[in-house]
Each structure stands twice: as structure tokens, then as C-alpha cells.
Amino acid sequence: MSFLFKRIPKTPAEFVRVLEELLIKLDSSGDPKKALEDVNRYLRQLKLVISGEDTSSPLELAHLLANELCHLECLYYMVLGLRKMDFDLRKDVVSVFSALLKKPNGNGLEKPVVQALLLQPETLVLLMRGPEHEELALSCGKILRECILNEQLHAYVLYLPYFWSYFEYPQRQQFETIAETVQTLEALLTRNPRLVGQFLVSNREHFLVRINSLVQSDNYVLKRRSARLLCDILLQKSCQAFLFEYTDDPTSLKIVMMLLSDKLRNVNLEGFQLLRLFFAKPKKTQKIFDIFVKNKENFLRFFDNFDISDLGGSIYEERDFIVNEIRKLPNIERVEMATQSN
Image 1 (spheres, rainbow, N blue to C red):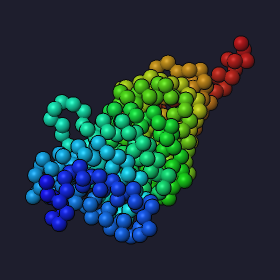
Image 2 (tube, one colour):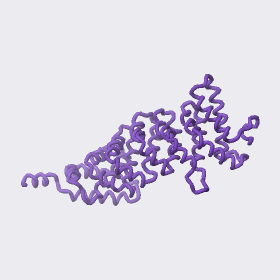
Image 3 (tube, rainbow, N blue to C red):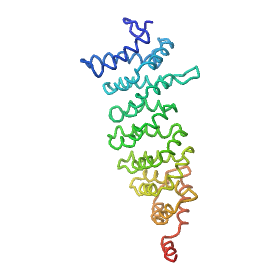
Image 4 (cartoon, one colour):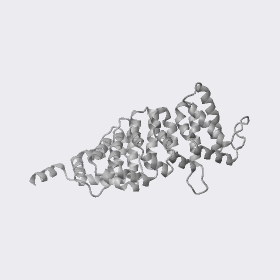
């Protein structure tokens, strides 16, 4: 079958094999510029056919190319070669993965690309490790977020030890890449809620330490988005077991109180959303209750100055509920006197 390059007839299998060989040569070629030009030529044409941008190519050709990509190690070498590519070529790699992951499979079986990634998980490992090189955070993040739309792929990467690095990457990254890495972390912890709920049951303590470290970050964007992410997780029905354990944790409550004392109003709002979960729990542990009592006046002072006049929805009712619960708390003097009399 003749396609893509009129002067060099190739079958889909030959085309993918040549592309794989060119990708491998990116690390070993004596002429890296020529190697990159060749990869660019092949990858650009592959993207046009796989994504359907080349309307002159038959759909069968895209199907054959997709199957060949999944039978060889070409996908692995595409990700491995990202560091050698320029911005536009990385975008082509992202487009190829996106097209493969979105391509429907009419036979009722799992998509070939999903099977290929699970059988050769080194590609997923490379994607998870992408933020180790800041210039790859964008490309690897986009591909990874497409991958975890599939629950099997999500389950695999969620249990990789590299998952925990996503709590460390943004704390040492430049501003431009923090948002991208946090976006991937958000996707890892909110897509497929049932799966995430199961994961948190078996990793509660480790997760709590990691997420609380982000919530305490000195970086405003990281602090606010991680607090919002934590709240989103806690409100998932599938994460109810984690919610109960979180609202029994005195350390977490103290961190929420730090958010309330932050000088930035938006951080205060994120802290408020978390605080209401502690007050909403009917049966509070003694340690949590003691913290509430000890800080009763601090809470009341905070809410006296908590400006939500420009906000709508149910936040007024939520604020009033918390304030009423705080006012019902005994004064600390009465608690101390009762303790002494006993």
C-alpha cells in the first residue's frame, strides 16, 4: 500500500517500524539534527492520519496504523524521545496518543492502545515521571490525563510508587509548571471516584500527610488548589470512609485553622469549606471537641470578620450553622472548673 510519502511506498507495518527506529536513533545518532528532522517528518504525517486531519486518507489506513503502533514499542519510544523534541513535535505526540485513546472500538473489546499500555507499562511509568523534567510536565500531563479516563490505566498508575512524587514535584517546580502538575494530581484523585475511594482506604495515613503538606505550602496557588482538591475528595460519596477519618484527625483540623488565619481571603474560603465538614459530623472525638472549645473565641472573631457579601448559594446557611454550633460550645473556663471539681 502506497501512502504518506509518494516516493517511498510503505505498508502501515513498515511505516511504524521505520518511525520506531528513527525515535531510537534520537539518543544515538551522530547527526541529531537530521534524526530529529526525520522523526518530525514521519510523526507529523502519522498525526494527520491518526487524528483524521488528513481527510484524503481512508479510515482503514488510520485503523491499520493504530494497530501497528500498539503491536510494537513505538509508543514507548515516542514518550522517551520527548526530551529531544521541540514544542511543536511534542504536541504531535500528544495528538497521536489522544487520537488512539479516543478511537472507538466497535468489537466490544478493550481498545488496543489500553491493552498495549498495560502489557508494556514502561510507557505509563515514563509518563508518571514526566515532571522530573519540567519541560515535559505539559506533554506528559496531557497524555496521562487522557490515559486515566480509562479505569484500568488509572488503577495501574495510581498504585505506582511514582504517584506520591506528585505531592513533591509542585513544591520544587517553577510557577509555570506547578499548575500543570497540580492539574494532573487533581485528575488522578477525582476521576473514577470508586477507584479513588478504594485507594484512600488502604493509603489514608500516607495520603493525609502528603496532602496536608501541600495545603501548608507557602505558594498561594498550590495552597489554594490543594485545599480545594482535598475538599472535592472528601465530598465524594465513594470517599466517605476517608471523610470520617479525616474529620477525626486533630492535626488536619489545626491545619484548617491555619487556613482561616491566612491573610488572603480566598485561602480563608477554602479553609471554611473544610471546617464545615468537621462541624457537620454529629459525633466528634474528644480531641476534636477540645480543640473547638479551646478556640471558641477565635472562631467567633473569625466569623465576625468573614466577608461573604459577594457570594451566593448556600454559603450563608453554612456559615450560620457553624456559628450556631460554635456558640453552643461551653466556655473554656466552665470546662476547666468542671475538670477541677472532678
